[in-house]
Image (cartoon, rainbow, N blue to C red; front, side, top):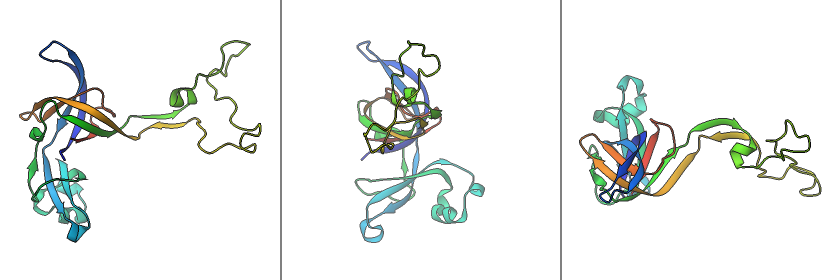
Length: 202
C-alpha cells in the first residue's frame, strides 16, 4: 500500500498532451520518516508509523521524545498498513507515486459553524407567497401528528454545527509528481482549507 502525508495548497488546472484541461489541487507532500515498525507478535498487528513535519523538541513532551529518540520531533504521526520490510529511520518520499496512479485522499473539511437546514441539509425552505415574510428558511414541522408518538424522531435533520468532518474522496488521479519540490498534483478538489493535513493512499 502506498501512503503519503502532505499539506493542501491552492487549486490550479493542468493540460494533458491532448489539450484536455483538468482541475487539480497542489499538495506539498513528504518526506516521511519511519518512527516505528509494528509487527504481529509484539503489537498484535502489522503497521508502519511515520512522522511528518519537523518541530522543536522543546515543544514535545517527554514520552514522545523517548519514542522518537534520535529521529528528532514531528508535528504529525500517523500509521498505515505496509507491504514489505521497513526499517525505523527510513525515509519515504513522493517518488512512491507516479502520474496516472489512482489514489484515495482523506482530510478534515472546512468548519462552517452553526448552519440552518437549507445550507446543512439542502431543504427547499417555505414558499415565497401567502404573506410569508420571515420564515422562508425555517425547517417547518418536526413532529406530532402521530408520526412518532408526538415526539421528535431520532435522526431528525435539523440546524446545527456543519463541517469539520473527516472526508474521504476516492478515485482521484495523480497528474504530476515533482520530487525536487516535494509537490504532487492531484485531480479534482480535496477537503479542507489550504494548510490542512492530507492523507494520500494508493
